[in-house]
Length: 250
Image 1 (tube, rainbow, N blue to C red):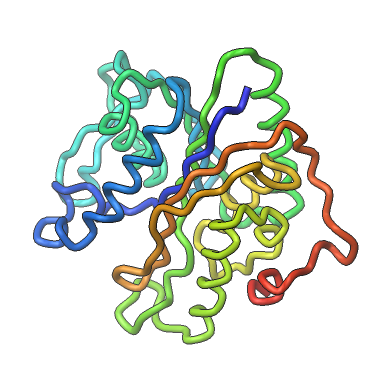
Image 2 (cartoon, rainbow, N blue to C red; image 1 turned 180 degrees about the vertical axis):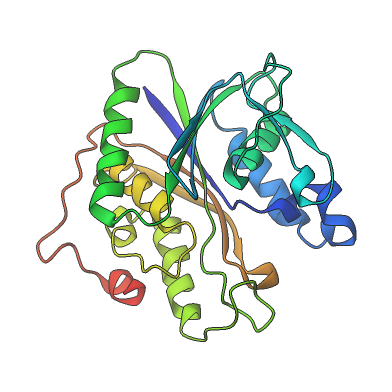
């Protein structure tokens, strides 16, 4: 049973040990991410984007050493001692779990970043069917960034056309517009994860709550919580559900 969905960026700068002097600058985003994750039950499924399709079970442990500081993370309180090489979305999910709900157990599903929208939607529908087949409450953590081209020093360079796209993405996430997510362009780093989310919730959540949005360091961050509706089959509206937000996203 899907009980709640938390949306966070996959930002190592939110980890204080990695942020250094910047820790205070992103404090609002870190606090919001912890608050969103705290709304999930004790069983999590995290979804994110990586170089290849992977699944990591709750007995997995990793470290942020590749990002400059050996900050250990785990996907459950009783994870195995061996340290695995984890993609950023899994590392951040493990760190967030340890901070927000140390008793929680998380599975991480990583989706390759070049899947098309139809495939991503199908991943989401399949995941929802799997979750709904069980009786225990499950929370989904979406670990995804927006555009990474929002300022001149941004990691992806500067693209002024990305600003309205990011604003439309933030607006869609804030109001639970799952249809708009199906039209995301490739410039959104977490596109596939957001489209898996769209397949997961179908026609949309019954409630969407924004906690914070912004673009520190030129990367679009959104933190929020969605509460799923009971009827979840994805039904695009006539004309593929194109709305004002959808047109901005394309």
